[in-house]
Length: 285
Image (cartoon, rainbow, N blue to C red; front, side, top):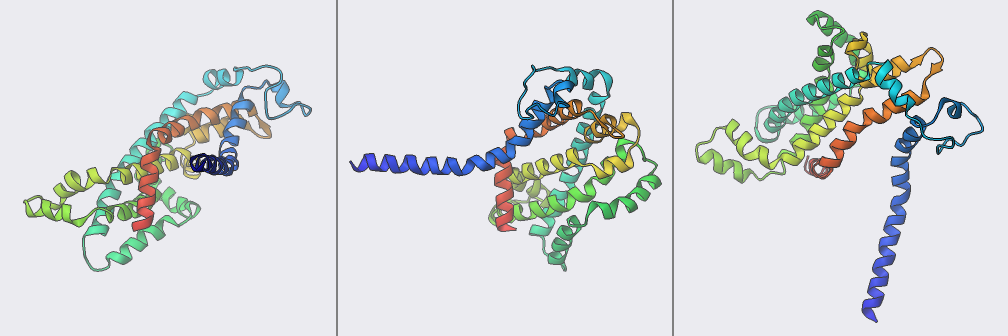
């Protein structure tokens, strides 16, 4: 009797927990569902005010995806986004690892102020930075190229990644580093051979954050690049499929669906690392 009541209580508790999750899951997945449905509708159904917007009524079509592949430079935009995101994130992550470890472990005058200043730098709105950064881009002679974005994106990636890794490095016991130093390892050897393998969740979290932010960035990509061949997917889809007051909704939604796939894949494979690194850095930072 007691075991039956215990099982019933467990079932009620689980049902209550899942019922609470339903609104959040709906809120998170509905935009993606709506994009997919819209991208599979014909133009006649899209502009029919009497049609139901939440499912396909007149048959699924793939014309919008074919238009995206055949009539635009979508593959070039995706390639540009991938190259920019990977290079900018990798460079930022390397700098952030060195800076985060230094601020978390080394003791020098002003280390606390430096750590706070790093995070405050991240809070500066991008709209205040793109004007001076545009002058830097012109001075370097890389305007209207993908290098303009590769150079400017670390300005907002490094501060947050450094702050996040500072918190995660502090969760690693000092004793393992001290043992390595006593055995004759240098500080850099200790970082890359001892500390870094133990900080993989934090590093993956910072990498995912940087990749997501650079992939979705819009202001700098719109300001610094004007050639179609150098645009990112986010800017290319919106600029080429919105012409004046004409919106190609089907192709816009198809582009949005395809552009979100790399981000979805990254989080599917590395979600556990992301949550572990983010929570550990938040608690110990």
